[in-house]
Image (cartoon, rainbow, N blue to C red; front, side, top):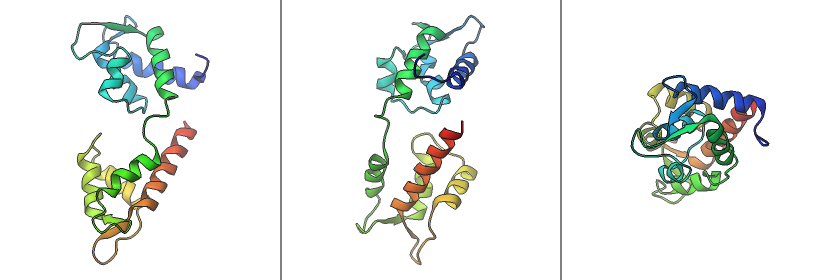
Length: 159
């Protein structure tokens, strides 16, 4: 794979092997999304189906040779949500349109929306990235999001 480092290929092969139930170097296409998410990608269900995933077990299988180009393509896909995209989502919670939102709403969102986080994970994220709440429980969300995105980028580079 031209754009995958040896470390990325090794990680992809490892994650793939977890879903290779019988050791034959194939996975059921229904597990494609799970393998990609285990590799820290966030494809939509539509993207997974477009890339060859299925919704029913037993319809199709994928080999590691078929999987690696899919991983490479999605890894390099820049259409997975940017800082600006996430900022627009948080603006929906900005009732006063002043760049702030309730810290409790942010915490609740992290626990309940998308790939749900455990309470301990949310506490760690918030303690490292969130500004202190004001007297009414509001926080500025843009600096929080910037720190969160910067932290995620730094962790990805460290891998």
